[in-house]
Image (cartoon, helix red, strand yellow):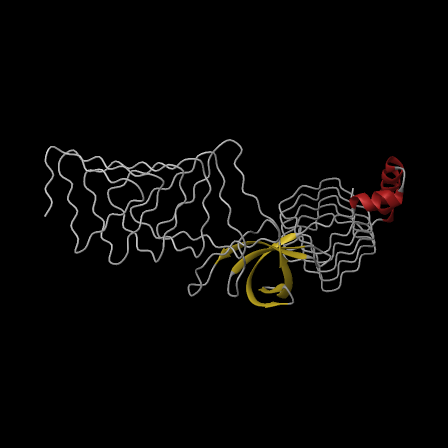
Amino acid sequence: MFMEANLKRANITNSSFAKSFFGKANLKEANFTNSNLKNCVFSKSSCIATIFKHADCSYSDFSFANLTGADFTQANLFMANLYKTIEEHTIWDGTNKKNITKNRQRFRRGRKLATQYYLEENSMKNIAKKLDLDQPWLEYGNIVAFKNQQWIVKTNNGEIQTKKSISCLIKPEIGDKVLISIDSQGESFILSVLDRAKENKDINLNFQGNVNIESRSGKINLIAKNDISLASQNNLTLASNIFFISSHKGDINIQSLAFTGKKIKASLKKIKMVCISVEQVIERLTQKLINSFKFVKEHNEVQSNSSRYLVEETLIMHSKNATHMSEEIITINGEQVHLG
């Protein structure tokens, strides 16, 4: 039952509404093409420019309906009741009007049927609210401009100012072909971007507010044939139980880096460092080397509480001048000692 329903511009083609009641409904510019409307009641409804092409309206009652500009091309109106209808510029091309009646009694029966419907729902006002359908329809369009945080979309019915639906993740651009949803109240949304102009092939996923991408039972892969870039104006945080990086070559450019951890284990073939200064504070340092070379251009100084050198074979110290100073004892012990 669609008593006093607002179905203006509703696109309900190829549908079945047999034995439905559309009394006093607003059906202006609605499209019922190829629909089953057999034995329906359209009494006192507004059917201005309504499309009934190829619809089965047999046995239906259109008493007192306004059929101005309605299109009944190839429709079946067998035994339909057209009592006191307004039929200015109504299109009847190929319409089956066999046994059409203009009978007030059928209008009265339809009105009685409507009364029964009202009693079943208990309140005429509540019924109208429940059945006042605001069914949207879909249209193709091309974006021609962006103004006041809304897109201007050119359709076959003119330009429409609309906004992007939350479910449309791709940011629309001028020139895009889009699918939009429109209702009888004039509210519209861009549902999806269907095609993009050749000169603008970039795809931008656009969100408002925080965004979470979550996989509860699987993994997430980001795969690109070329580059993948991550950029943030604030912080970039990576957190995981185990962290892996694998690359043939890498470059890291960080102005200031602080590293905190418990253990580092590195296995490298070669390390090359160029620094202006290096400062290390270590409680214990152990190094195992096969060969060790150190070249100091100017000054080399070691300060320690005690020092010990163990050399298995030869210890050679060569300098232009050498000074050994001790506040107490200097001991030189060997099988042979050569001086001079």
